[in-house]
Image (tube, rainbow, N blue to C red; front, side):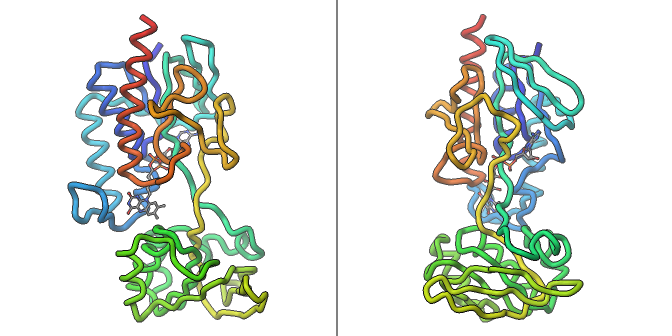
Length: 302
Ligand SMILES: Cc1cc2nc3c(=O)[nH]c(=O)nc-3n(C[C@H](O)[C@H](O)[C@H](O)COP(=O)(O)OP(=O)(O)OC[C@H]3O[C@@H](n4cnc5c(N)ncnc54)[C@H](O)[C@@H]3O)c2cc1C
């Protein structure tokens, strides 16, 4: 039986691994796609201390190298369920079951969809949730960028360097992003703002040709000709596989300040938990606490 299983190889997962391996625990990390997590989608990170500018991929390579230096064992598998049998937990995966004493859930989150006509149809053919991944395909074109938070504005800035014009669509009359990012966006001649507006449909024959916008204040509609739509309207937790812990109404896992969930021996860190801020720095902090709490829990069993 393993001491600890870490679910997810993003910033939280690797940090939990570094701390728990240095505490001499016998650790297994399970990851369903590839290492890196969401931040590997980000072209440039300017707010992770120690690096004034670094790409998401490079930062996560450094996390992985550091965890491997302490002997991290990773397995490629999707966790489908976690069972609580008191001092023993069973982690069920697509490639078999694993037994362990404690689990840290670092399964993160994924982008929320708009849920409008045309979105599903054009996903991968004009609709994208990652500017870093797809901006290149829209070189010289006009695109809509939906959302007004940190990620939305940052990604709009990234798009503005590549495309002809970015039409930001935001349901409010002010951005929610950090002030420093807002200032950069307002200064960009390639970014135009459509305030108080929501996308009601994404239109086109074989590819995206326009979006229909509705003004939420006066209900008026207008059609905006664009060849691409980038959606940055929030995130959903990757927590469907675990139904034995308490969650909030959005599906994020509740934890106390020791990162303990409602089930003893199950801990959570990073974007998957209820938290006021979802960033690399917060995921790393959570995971350091979660690993330390898991170590104390495992010791208490002996
Ligand atoms: C486009 C973009 C730009 C961003 N820019 C910044 C930025 O500049 N600065 C910043 O600090 N933050 C940024 N963020 C936020 C940051 O990426 C997240 O806060 C951070 O990645 C959260 O880390 P995490 O480890 O909790 O989760 P994640 O990074 O989501 O990693 C979770 C991992 O768990 C795996 N997983 C999920 N479910 C399962 C399962 N059932 N079985 C096995 N594995 C599973 C996933 O495949 C994934 O690899 C950005 C996010 C995006 C999307």
